[in-house]
Length: 374
Ligand SMILES: Cc1cc2nc3c(=O)[nH]c(=O)nc-3n(C[C@H](O)[C@H](O)[C@H](O)COP(=O)(O)OP(=O)(O)OC[C@H]3O[C@@H](n4cnc5c(N)ncnc54)[C@H](O)[C@@H]3O)c2cc1C
Figure 1 (cartoon, protein in one colour):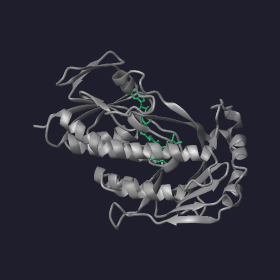
Figure 2: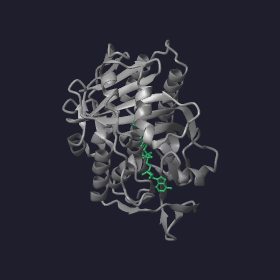
Figure 3: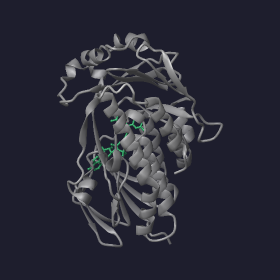
Figure 4: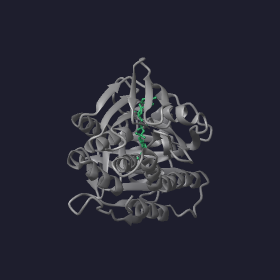
């Protein structure tokens, strides 16, 4: 009999939902609690690269996921006026019949994952968090914020950057750090040329265009914001346009169409990396709770999804919970540390305006590393 038969997942984001799906597919009972009482996500998109497409196949959601996404092959890197500097062919890691990469709206991804988790029998409760966790050695006693309680073989903290489970487990040893940059995003009708991931480099920041659907793409921009200023929501469109001043070509044309401040999604970059095992006893952190990084390599959610799959594989493997979680860490730690550190490094090089930094080389290296089996 497996050591873990009943799991509590704290957090119904990408990592928590993938963990719920993966564990339910292995026959493990899953309770999932989500802090938000309205279970929704903000309306921009996300890049999912070939390693993620491979993991979506393992999760058994690939067909519904691809129906909701825009599939593409290559990643191209351009100069600020749109001149191509590199084109990196995609790798079809899920098999020759499936695309290399995907762009998908966060809402569409949430729908596919949440519907699958519910269909598979995950017991989801919204508007709820954990009040306290007591590890009894062979189980964890959980008191919820509504005063109810429950006993679990394992508690998985998938509650993101400001994880409460991390606080309960490790105190204030790890707190999110602002890196000095922010990300701006805006949706547009898809330009016919944007049938691949298009990155544009300039001296003042990096922009990109990501296809999300036949008729939708989004523009992202990274900018240096050393003082982490408060942004007046009414000025976001103007501020985003200002920060795109160094671009011409397609990005320059799109810049002039950024007029609705209500549609600009602005986010300061904050990171945290738990630089030691992500578990104590029977409580484990996954995803951003353990390793939130900057979006420079587009792999944060990818790492959360991989965590979920590896966890389900190890929990149904041999040995005690301690041995299972130790093996989980052996498969996850260095890979996530590499993504976390490389993403932060890419941001630091942008802030230093380091023209010698080989970003194309880093992207190629990241794609090769993440293509390796986990
Ligand atoms: C600007 C930006 C762009 C990005 N682009 C990409 C990209 O293109 N590709 C990519 O792979 N990654 C990208 N990422 C990273 C990606 O969004 C994250 O790595 C991913 O969302 C992590 O998933 P998660 O489930 O660990 O955390 P989250 O998605 O943050 O989910 C955590 C969930 O837990 C809930 N929660 C929080 N606290 C509690 C609590 N106390 N109790 C219960 N529930 C709680 C939250 O409401 C949320 O639903 C980007 C990140 C940023 C900031």
